[in-house]
Length: 430
Image (cartoon, rainbow, N blue to C red):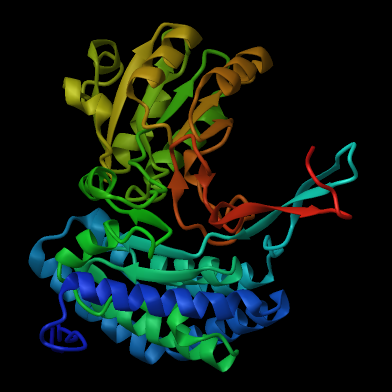
C-alpha cells in the first residue's frame, strides 16, 4: 500500500494560495446562495443521501484511512492522536449515522427568536439566518469532515474545509462520498469544498480572507488555535484545549465517585472532554479507592504532596501539570480544603471547557454550578459527556470556550446569526 500523498495541483501553476482561497471562497459563496433558496426538506433529504453515500464508500474510505494510519505511525504520532485518526467499520457507521441525525434535526433557519409591535404600528421580528461561508481548519480527526459538512448544510451555510496532513487521504475520501450524496440530492457541489492542497500558506490566506470567509472555526491543538486567533482578520469561533476538572466533594457517594472518575479519565483519554485534573476534598473518606483503579488501568498519576500520601505510586506534580491538557493516560491530582478551594483552583487553571462536581450535597452542587464559569458545568456525571451528540444536538463543530456568540457544543443554532424583519403600513419617522 502506497503511503505517498499525491498533491492536487492548483488551477494553474501560477495560482497563489491567496488566489486559490479567493477562487474557492467565491464558488462557495455562490453555492451558498443557491443552498439558502432550497426548502428545509430538500436539505434534509440531501444530507440523508450523503449519509447513505458514506456507508457505500466504506471500501474507499477505510483503505484511505489505513494509509493515514501507516503514515502517522511512521511519523511517531502519539497514541492519542492515532486514536483520533483511526477509522473502522463501527466508527464510519457512527459518522454516517451522525450525518443522518443532523439531517433529521429541527432546522434553525427561519425560526423567529422574538417578535414585538411598536406603538406606531411597526411589527418587528428577529429571525435566524445562516452565517454564510464558514472556514473550518482542523487536525487529525477525519470525522470533522463529515460533521462540519452536515452541520453547515443543515443550517444553510457553505463550508470551506482545510484538514490536517495527518488525515489527508481519509478527508479526501470522505469528502468525495459526501459531495456525491449531496449532489444527488440537488445541493451544489461547491457548498462543501475541501482545500485541495496541504500548503500551509493556504491557512494564512483563509485567515485573512475578510469579506469572503464569514467565520473561521479552528479544531486542533493549542498552537493551531493560538495561530488562528493571532492572525485572523475573520471572526473566530474558538475551540480551546480541554483542561477539565472533576471535584470529588466530601459528600460524594464513594461507589458513584469511583465509577465516574475512572470513566472521566480512561474511557477515551484523547478527547477534549477527558478529565485532566482530579480534585479531592481533604475530608473525603475514600480517596485511595479513586486513585487505585486509575493506576491499575494504566494511568500515570501525578500529585501534590497531600495527593502523593494517598498512594506511593503517585509521582510528584510540577507547576505545569495543573495547566496541561495531556490527551493521554496521565492525570494530575490535588487534595483541596473544601468547595471554596476547589472552585478557586478551577478558576486559576481551567480552560473553561468542562468542569464537574461529584456530591450528594444539593447546596454544594448548586454553588458549584453557579460559580464555576466554564462552558459546561456538571453535577454527578462524567466529563466525557461533553459532546454535541450526547447533548442531543447531533454532531458538533466544536466546543466553544469563549463567551460571545456560542458557548459549549456548537451545533446548528451556533452556526446561525439573525436579522430583523420590520413590517409597516407606511410609517414615517417624525
